Image 1 (tube, rainbow, N blue to C red):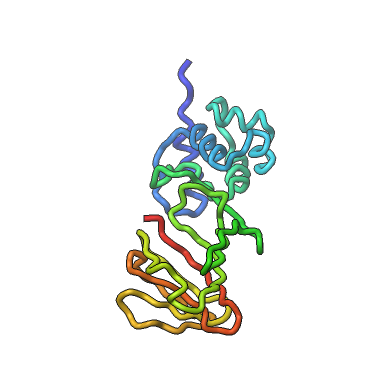
Image 2: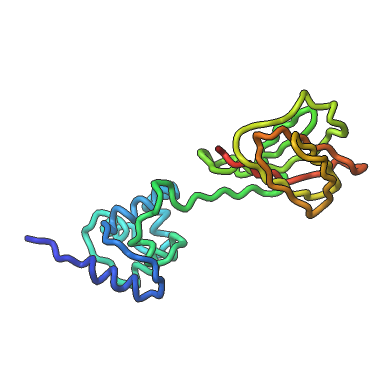
Length: 208
């Protein structure tokens, strides 16, 4: 017996939810399974988040039932996405819904002679950015073993104290709390504290 084609009506319901994102037909069950596994959720966990029975979610993932719009809404809410996103494949081949929360003082420490780095979002791998807090211990360029340089671009934001950003091609720049800089990280660069206390900064480096 041929299985009834229920997807067009589901896509229509998704469109009616108010999102104008172009919707392309795809296998809803496969999409839901991918979204669940991207969050490392078991069927029980995902069903609990959505307020659905485990058996119901299992049938949806295996294409054994056509969910009502109410069930779709619960599922989308549980996955923290909109209903149309259930029917829209990701634009890039990447994991969906990744998130890492780093509580205050829970960053991964990486102390050096000149900086005390605290890596943020350490639980995520294959990141496009490397965010970290740094306590700047150095007070002189002479404390460094030459220039720091690496691939990618870098964003610097002064959290506390005052610093001097020293770069290979520009005059040194004195910066205070709230100041920021964005620069090519392959250009030699070093940061020193100019305040009485060690300055703290937020650094975000692109993973080029």
